[in-house]
Amino acid sequence: MKKTYLLFLLLTIAVFGQNNNPFAVEASVIRGNILPHTEDMYHLVNGHPKGFMLSIIKKTDGSKEWHQAYNYPDYGGYFLYQDFKSQPLGQNYAAGAFYNFYFWKRRLQFRLSQGIGYTTNPYDKEDNSKNKAFGNRWMANTNFGLTYNTPVFLKAISLQAGLLFTHYSNGRVVSPNSGINTYMLNLGVNYHFSEDFKRQVDTTTVQKNYKEPIRYNFVFRTGINESPIINSGQYPFYHIAFYADKRINRKSALQLGAELFLTKSIEEYINYFSVAYPEDGIDADTDYRRVGIFIGHELIINKISIEAQLGYYAYQPFKKDIAIYDRVGMKYRFSDKFFGVLSLKTHLFLAEALEIGLGYRL
Image (cartoon, rainbow, N blue to C red; front, side):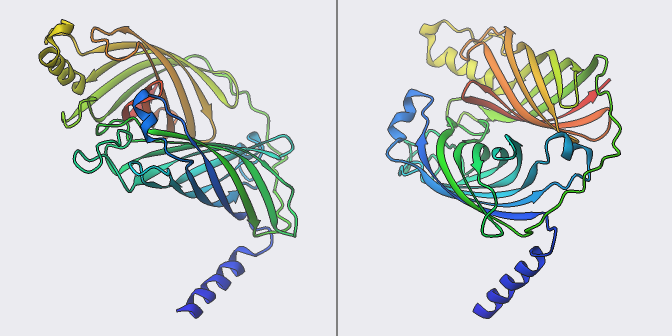
């Protein structure tokens, strides 16, 4: 068995060690603190979370237009392990994909990653009632990192140090779902499989004017979620948006629009409050529907875009949530007119819905 592992290792080095190989591997250790965002989170902060992250990195070579537009970013896959040093929280594992963007002569790196997380110790009414962060074992994982990279030394090795912010949330598919945020110190080492990697820059690219007239978009988002009342049941939601966008340059488009929220779990939440808290004077017939207006920004990479939106409920009869909401997500263009979206809608740090949807651009 040991000989088999050794042979596999030698073959891996042989494959990745070819000249001008665009791959690298990275190993980092992390240690930091939980960032409580509600009062009922403080009892979960018992120590300093620690863990590690492993990444497989592919460097862009300039063969596509977006490589040069974004200063030759990296992309790849990651595996993340975190021990929260808190018995109710346990440990989390996550895996997903990332982009690395470079600044300041490629010494400063910004990482954006998104994946799926798994926790060893979710909420349980009898055995783990203190864990209000994770209502089930599976959830979304989002990470932001800012690190400083040293030049390559010892032929193939470079070092990095910086900060990593991690977030776990199931989008309130199941309650409870306060989620967990941590900020961590990140120390890592990179091994580059090619000592003399060269980019094949396309110098024949014709400058293009990316500005466009105002375009109009229709988006339908859906999914299931649960009200903040544990075990109140999962119900579908339908979020329907219409917005205008204006592309202003190669990387950015601005958005302005309105949307209708038909969230059936809120309808059940209203019924619960009308019975459980009659002193609040909430009528069971209170309209559960909401109407929001929002502004947004779209960061256009290639077929993939990253969206961020900030909205305000212009119509919100049931006011248990604050009037301001936000959304972050990804868009994938199937064509010039059709696109898919995956997004997380929150009220500041409190998630409400993990949305999946389809859109049409006029």
